[in-house]
Image 1: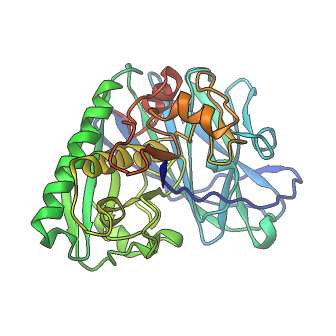
Image 2: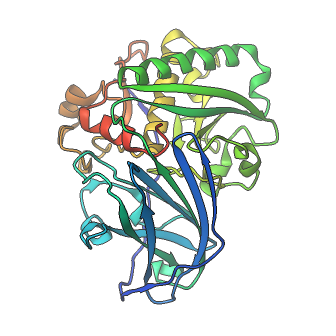
Length: 376
């Protein structure tokens, strides 16, 4: 069978644990729209530990996202509730064969933590939560550094229905070809169809960024030019850049800028998707190829909202959800999960003309999607 690969790059670093120090500082501003409230401030971390960042949760808040941006790499090492109960600790997940959040690893200069992640986590309640934030230097060791923090909080009484606002951005001169634009819009309809099944309404807008390279090479290190594109977005919006390739790799369908991805305006606020990887060597879309591109869009935004592959392509790492099968062989995993939206590759016939429709999500996967702070 023809296995079409959907790429996600993961990474990590070694950490030296030495203690904690509380140190909250200044530069705070607040903006509110819809059901999401946004607060910003800055902290300076100590050089020998993570620091406790206090998050004040008011009545009716159902989820929060804390984003840290720095010239250093940023890790979110733990979450503690108002009673002092540890809800998340990095060491419980560092060597696990299950994946819960990228936030603990601290391998990027922009890192986001969404809480709660799953429906098995305790609902938020009024009080002071603590997120342990670290700035990391060479070798993953603690270092002192300024970290700009953005807090998004959501008041959403429904954990089964919601809207997600997405800006779809054509890069380079991609939107100069009417056939590509038409195929993109058809693919978005497939994306919309998938999400509707799971209680999510897609609200999309289109934009053009002719100065951004259509080969999407920025995904490795971010790009300051992305700040202009994301400027003015509604709080909670996500951004998808459509280009010709992902850094010149035509075997990669798409990549998400984080699991979860940030809602803050940053050089890492993105999902990237290649139209040419889907259309193939003839650069002409078939109906099936448009359907797969729509599934890729939903899949990569699914990563951005906190979903992992239910099983990784090596069949020895899994997501941390209870109702996705823990299969261990390629054949068994394809039999059980090929139709799942987050399966790591498309399962197709030898000719490539007949592929399994991938649009299903388990109940626990839906729970992650609806707890993402951007799902309103």
